[in-house]
Length: 367
Ligand code: G6P
Image 1 (tube, rainbow, N blue to C red):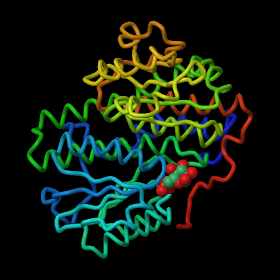
Image 2: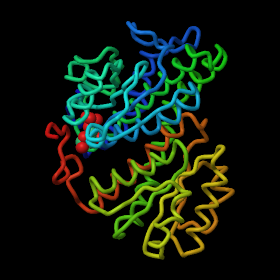
Image 3: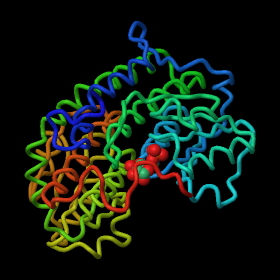
Image 4: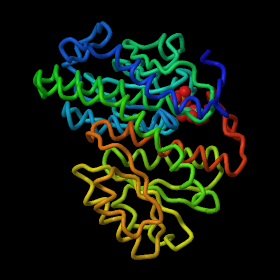
């Protein structure tokens, strides 16, 4: 049953390993295999009329929203704001007619996100939610409910809900691009094809579990860890750092690779592991040149890339982790696995309570 650990040591571990199945399940409900198109639930508003998207969420769900911003802007050419719910409400967000407000939440109950939803409702926005609990408050109050089919998530630190959120958000971006006329049928079919590659690529990423566990030995003794990535993989750096903080209690920071030279590079010495997320793709060379700047200061680099990227740039790294070669669209889903497992194994080495980390709650219902 979904609420038992089975052969796994922790719920978090089980949930990480469920990702190929639950992402496939989620994709199945948004994709029509027969003509390779995205199918959304019935809409009672005109999606093609959406002029701006405001994404609001907390924690890991917020990072899924950050990835989605790249996709909505790139594919659908719609301007996107993304904010953490606790900040959003207390600035004066400008919400104009034609705006779609999109809330991302595993539980559908996070108090700050729910309050932001109500604020947007009162301001006349169309409300869409990506939630894992279809009976949740957010689902009840939305115009459009886009469920993730991750199944119950028990571990406090979110894992499988995140990759399922990304799958739904990518499908939504493709649909929006199509109705906006930014993508033709072939373009949509291409996106669908890449999304359908995700479950097998997630399985391949999970095959690195042992290698990741041994790299965790390098992280466990550290006091501080840096993560860096670029473009849609920058939120993965943030998510990697968040996961490590949450369950291993090691201080970590995620940075956009190009921003490292504006501050965090001052922290770099031979005591600080730096996890570099660099899948092959249009941003690879830039990320690697930022990585070289860290290496030149004695930084201990853990390079997470694919075989080709590691062949090109792995020299001088203290460790490398090889992921399958993937299309850049699905890299944020696939590279979620190594950052989750790095945090998981580090926490196991440290002996912390992985499923119930101190001071954290699964669903935060206070503002
Ligand atoms: C808590 C959890 C996180 C989660 C965040 C947002 O802080 O510990 O894992 O990402 O809430 O939760 P939601 O249910 O809104 O996605």
